[in-house]
Image 1 (cartoon, helix red, strand yellow):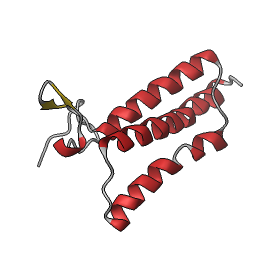
Image 2 (image 1 turned 90 degrees about the vertical axis):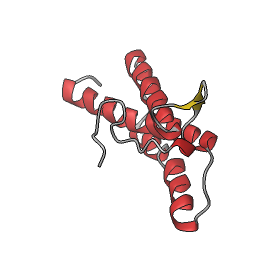
Image 3 (image 1 turned 90 degrees about the horizontal axis):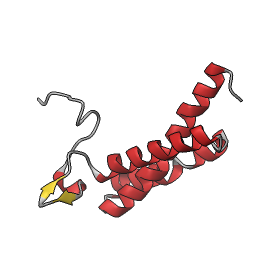
Image 4 (image 1 turned 120 degrees about the horizontal axis):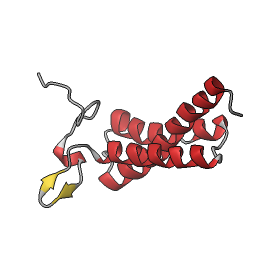
Amino acid sequence: MSVISIHNLGCHRIPERCFYFRGKPMPFCSRCLGCGVGHTFSFILFISGALPDLFFAFAMLIPFAIDWSIQEFLGIMSNNYRRLITGIIAGLGVGVFIWKSFEVLLGRF
């Protein structure tokens, strides 16, 4: 049983699903890397006041769900670049949900 720590929280860290840096797998998978990039971009959009609406945020989760479903139910494995791209898109969508929630809680419209 592994211990959850801050550097692998929620990430499976399967080496085949990680990008490599200097011959070693990164400490998070390509999809989690993409989600982090998407979350960061959503914060930039929040600060600039340019967040898309919630419908668009929900739509950004669809490519992630399709990619996962193809792997899970059809057994067709995704590659790291597709995982990265779907992670960025989904991370942006989730980030928009988070920042829109902050806007509602803080009364910023």
